[in-house]
Length: 454
Picture (spheres, rainbow, N blue to C red):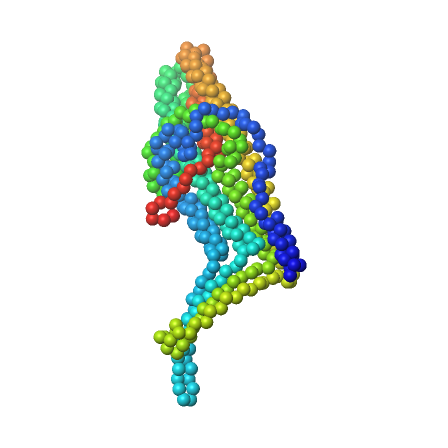
């Protein structure tokens, strides 16, 4: 008896050492700070920092109606149901039984009725059930973080698509203004040709430029249509649905938000939290697999009664309380292989956790670097635009005075118009880099299903 008690104590000691939750440390080095930071506090719903009411409405509609996000809602409901199912195993189960029998003999017929209750419960000495339940609960929490990540990604997609659409509408407006300018220049060149002051080549060159602008307008209008379709689909609407006002001017870039400490950022990002929870869930599955190697102790209680008549059922009860022990003796290494498999999965999840952290840090630094360089590029383009405008003015004066040929005027005009389009595109690209930064710093927000279901 003492020997059996000693063995039992040793098993408890071993299991307590092998199944206890582990402390998960950050598997990769984290820097002390980011390369740049601002003073503004980034709101949880980051797109509100742009002060664009139209964007606010678009994102909220996408979060409510986007089919892809609804899929993730379904995954969360599935994971939560699985966690509740796993949690139920920690409680006793109670089943009711009922039977009817009919007996016929040469001398008589009889009918019997039987009722019974069966209760069963597993004594979770080794923590197998608790660990499995904890793993399911952690997986459900990880799926909740996956939902937040999907919401942040969707909001960024909507913002990028919206501002690209606004930029293309602005390009159409700009190209039409350039077309009117080129048509006026064509009228002047044609008049000079009729007076014999210039050759036919000058007229043909200007006509070619007019047609080029018309082609650019057609291409830009096609891009507007495609982007409008993409935006509608993101909002869960048919491609041809009108989902936003016709806006053709981009907003100003908001002030740079505070980036905070890298350690705080990775702790607040939902994708990092999801990876961390997946590590914890994998650790609990290892504990469950280890505990599955040890005997299972169960309790079973039954209560039965039977009689030929219903009124006699409660006169003759039989109650039984039993305990059973099921110990694995030979399984050809199945349980040990399962332990090794779950440990291998835990190792994978730990390395994935490190990868997600590094990717999160890189996204912030990439967005900061891109925005910084884009600011310089936009400043350079604006300076080039001012210089190009001066060149156009002076070459036109020189051409009118006969000092230069028309090719110089044409080149100056094309350069000026190209810089106008470049400046508009550069500003939109700057907004996109800011969106990337907000997405990289986003911590998510509380997600709620719409009334009436997911």
